[in-house]
Structure formats: C-alpha cells, structure tokens
Length: 361
Image 1 (cartoon, rainbow, N blue to C red):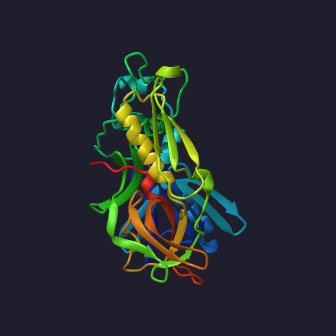
Image 2: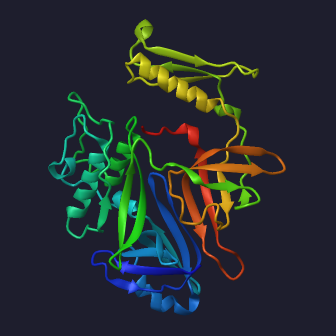
Image 3: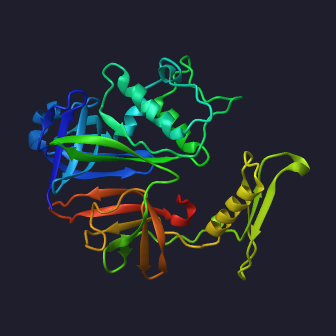
C-alpha cells in the first residue's frame, strides 16, 4: 500500500503540497467527534514545509492507495528541534471555533418540535455563510423523529451569550433519541471534498461480511473487561410524574447470580409502554458480562483497512490466555499508523458493546 499526504488552502482549495513528507503519522475518525491527526515533518524539509502547513487555514488529507481516508484542519505546527510537529482535527473541530453572533443562527430559529438533524444543518449553513467561513463541508439530508424545543420552551441561541456552533451540535446529539454524526472525505472530479454523515437512530450497520478474529486479523487486544459496576439483572425505570403518580416500570431476570439492580431515570417519559420498552432494553444490555474496548488489526481480507466505518457493528472473536469472547461490537473510532521502516501498518479500533445502541427499522 502507499500513503500520500496533501494540503490545501482552507478558503480557496488551492493545493499547497501534493506530497507532504510526514513521519510518525497517526490519524482516524470518531463517533460524534472530529477525530485527529498527529505527524512530524521530516527534518531536512522543515523550513520548506512551514508555508505548506500554515496552522488555522490549511486543510490536510490522508490518501491510501488513491482513496482518501481522512481529512481535517491543521491547528498546530510546532517546531521541536529539527522536527516540525503537526496536530490536526477533523472539520467538525471548526465549529468549536465559531460562535452564533446573530442569535438563533441569524434567524434560522427559534426551534419548536424541530428535527435535530435540521438544526445541525442550520448550524453548518450559518457557519459557512459568514465571511471567510466556508470550508465547503456538506451535510447529509437525514431526517429523524426526535424533537427539540417545545412551544413553552423553544430551543434558542442568544447572541449575547455567543454560544459556539459546536455546542449547538452537541445539544442536538444529546437530545433523547437524537442523531449521531461522523465525517468522511472523498475525491470528486480530482478535488477532495468533505462531508458530515448523519445517522438516525444511529450510524452504521451490522456487518456480516467482515470480522475481527484472534489468529486471523487481530494482532493485539486490550484485555476483556469484566466490570460488575455496570451489571444488573433488575432495572427499575422511573418516568414522568411525582410521588405516587410517577410512571414506573421494572424488568427483571434470574440467572443464578447475586441480584444487582439499576435505576434508570427518564423524567420526560409519560407513556408506560415506551418506558417499559426502554427498561427492558437497558436490562438486556446490563445482563451481559465482559466487554472489548479495543483491538489492533493487521490489514487482512477478513476486514480490509477502509472497509468499515465508524458506527458499524462487527463480530469480534477473541481467544487469549484469560478469555474466550465472541460477540458483536460497535466501532466508535479508529486510528491508523501507516507503515514505517521499523513497523508494519496497523489500525487500532475503539469498540463498545453493540447492544447498547438501537437500530432503526
């Protein structure tokens, strides 16, 4: 495989470097976050590269075998002796450096019973409509059934508080049943383009075509965690209301283990059937012991690098000196280390239990 690193001017898209010489590279995306890149410019070209990595106004992309895998904004270019260390974050990081100076995103709000996906798109539209603020990011047209703001309490952003646009997006992700997001980059007509993926009720899909397995494509793993703090066979859900009128649902199962209980508070839930459904889902999730949080993969046909995305569920099978694990895990992020003189290419994948997330129909 071959890697290439290129940079462009953020506003014009003009290429600053087609082949930026980097070493010690690590990069990757994350779920509901911008991801990051760190790298070092080779010493003999450090002075030349300063113009090609102008921090705060330079976009950087990573290409592997003619496919763009990651893109973002260089935020720091720090000389360190004979090295120039670079730090970059995905395009979503730009939103934490921009604020709503007009209020309600310049008249796009306030929002009543609004789809959080629409508010996310409005935040990006406002960001890129301001002078010198267009980084040419497009956003999915995904829609959700989640709602933000009520007639009594609309969702608003006040100009005198100057909230960051990143905080607006965080609010939308935090809405009950709200969407998720991640970033992608690709070539379009010889030009790199950047895109925000929105997923509802979640990103990704269950992948039957790939797997992570010890002895095949897993090179190393974090130990399987057995943590009883998150374990429970009995979940008590507390919904809307107060005192004796408060909605309550209990879901329990016996399995020969010491009884452990968990309280799930959902003060906005008025419907007893929905509360019961949420409680059952929570109980099933908490009734499984053992979790894999990270695996290190080698490139292999079982799951080629670039074949999976943030949000996907993948079957993970681990057989080591302590554990035999076989279950579905969700990819919440990954970090690639391209090959070097001393090391082969590898990707470290961050994982979470798949049954803690809900699929749509």
